[in-house]
Image 1: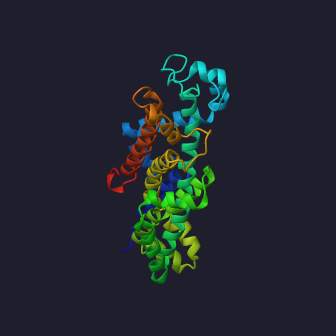
Image 2 (image 1 turned 180 degrees about the vertical axis):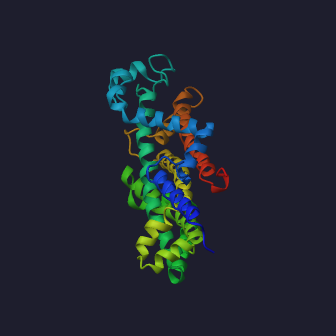
Image 3 (image 1 turned 120 degrees about the vertical axis):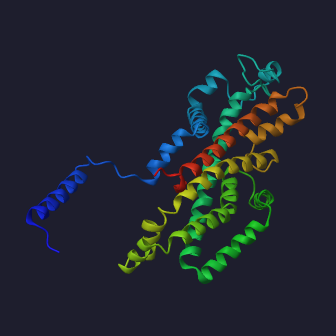
Length: 317
């Protein structure tokens, strides 16, 4: 079928105008998963509250050296006179969280303990996520013997109670913050690997992956440029929640004397030190407990909000 010249000309001009509009960015911006997710996340009040609380905790922990020692006192002070005068004081304007048995300000120790807890949560989750991504990608993309070996290895790790497994590993490699990173990070990869494997299996047979493979793209490029960006949403959600889990695990280890070595403050260590005074000076145990509760809850709420925001089924039509 042949079109009249004026009709063909109008079609050409319309196509050129559309290309010009798109090239100059004056057309409606292309919607993306992350852009839509951020819009939905802003509507989730609990998730936004969690973000604000996490930012407050991070800022306070990072800037602690600038104001905590002068305002609240040295968290590791061991002056005998101070210990006698200020031992186990109740919360007041001068000491909002009270003082411990050595006269040290509990709020000061809680703030410095936040550094350790946040560092453990982020670093340990980073280690487990990196290992899990590699193992999950190998299992899902190559399948066969790789899938069998990696998934059976993950089953072995998951067969043991996680906390007991971490305690056993710490008992072998020794106490210390570095060993806590290693233990939590190494033992946390199986769940990440399983989640990433499932995400990859759902997209690896897509047309755009087949097209990239037919054009000669290497396996590494296909995974990095095509599969990973379309599978990472579930990992972001899981890793966010894992940070809260790592904080809880570190607190449990420190409570048992297997984590941070005193006198460095840790939320778990503070609870362990205050448990014997629960009936007479409850703030020694309650205050660090509230810090753990609110921070872990914030990461959980943020992860829950990210899960809803990144769900493509909720994307506006």
